[in-house]
Image 1 (cartoon, chains in turn purple, green):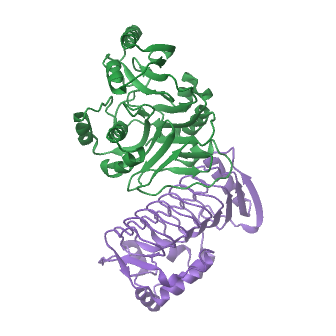
Image 2 (cartoon, one colour; image 1 turned 90 degrees about the vertical axis):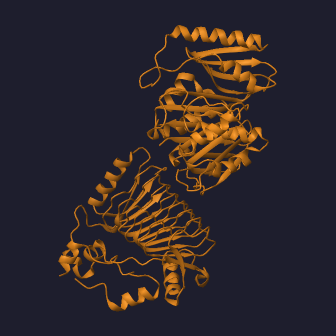
Image 3 (spheres, chains in turn orange, purple; image 1 turned 45 degrees about the vertical axis):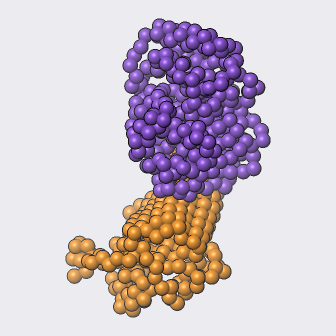
Length: 284
Length: 314
């Protein structure tokens, strides 16, 4: 297994004001290590062809029925699935552990795209509470607004909302990147542990409250700082990364990132980066 | 958890009874112990409409004490007698259920507080709503059951708010069901999703100021709190803004008057609300699927932020 935690990367992360930006999570090390890709097997996944496209109208389906049908289509090799008439239904697209190009022609309700690992998703509408909760990898793009708890506890991947989001965005997040084109509500980054949040607009009260680690970048006004959240210097590395990320996200490409504020955790947590016992044993 | 929904048509009337039924039924998974409607119907504005109950629904799931139906008739007689003594002329009388009545009253009410106190001094009698446009209908069961029971699907009006309740802090009964009338103000109603943690402190203060509580449901506090603010001269919006700090806990609530609809969200934004706003219609609910029941096409919706208060006029 390649050692992802190289000295050079670690130094770079620390120069950006983050204690440990190179992730040591199980997913990053084990499932997405390119050196081991050929040995990789993930239960319940399928070989799909992105050029094989189909449409699925879920107007008269329940969420479990729709999700089962998505799974069924993936099992037939469909790599691009367009969902018609989601009409704000809850829990659509959850638990997809596959490479997949998934497009929703409409809005989702609560818990849309929860616990996913790998799909590229575009939602041409709005999403309700807890969109993409626990996302492990992949990319989810929302064209309109999002509800509260956006990207709760995500561990990896990119989560992009081109509109505004509700309260507690990125609560408990453990990795990945959340990008907001508009404004964000109260308690954004509440108890976040790793990863990065970019907000191009304004943000509400108690930003980064009780955050352990990670970084928040804000382009607009900040309602108030939460406990343990402090300003940090915006470095050249930060600006380069922000430009690159916004470009890839197709959002705020001409945004002046040099004027963004950078917020990090003001506390130092001892033993925070230690491997868990089982992982430590594996490493030895 | 509970579900709330509301809508207001601006510049026109619509079938708000049926629309609200659809919205609340879409939220029935959030609670179906009871469902309530506050409908602002099209009326000539001459007479007061009084919705009141002379007993509780003691059907399956109710936490109310069983009563003999004959006591409902006795209470109704006393109500009729009291109205006659006050010089109020009952123009139209409807008795949908043994315990639930609707009166249209021709009466020049100078003081709604005194009027209501006299009616509610009759044991077992509670005014659910009083106004020239507002009618509060609430009962046990989900939205469709209540709508069918009271034939609400034909009600035409400008705006409405409603509530699908999962009972948590008070009983499964009509008196604890939402919406609450903003007693003693004509045409004011409130629905709430959340929990108020300074209920008893506020209640004690408000009762000392002469305000009335009919249940032990914390949500009733919002109606009484706003009524007291307005009694002291505040506008509805001013009262709602004061409630953001005056009420402690987590809440999203709607309040409606004869010509307006408002929403308020607590400073932690702990309770959900999705809002759709256009030039001729505002629709909002705890979940987007409520709005989708009246607007199935693709629309732009958003979550109001923490500490936000909004009021719309018809």
